[in-house]
Length: 73
Figure 1: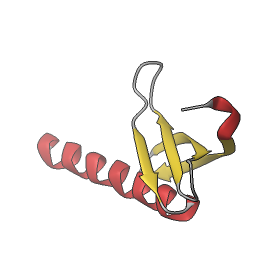
Figure 2 (figure 1 turned 135 degrees about the vertical axis):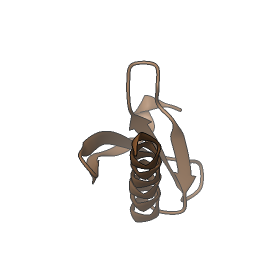
Figure 3 (figure 1 turned 135 degrees about the horizontal axis):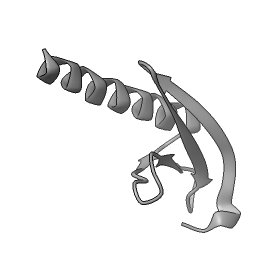
Figure 4 (figure 1 turned 180 degrees about the vertical axis):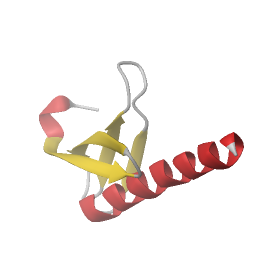
């Protein structure tokens, strides 16, 4: 991922967590959302648009948090 293709940085809230998401323009018209969870933990989600990438990130975080809650119960 070329840092010169960075087009936006957003914050996504899910539950009690806020995640920084860096949006990059892919070749063509799609985007890649790089989720900054930790210094060595940065999953990447490819999507056709920024909105869809952010929605996917938020849904994934909410799913992980729900799974953690159900395990703790």
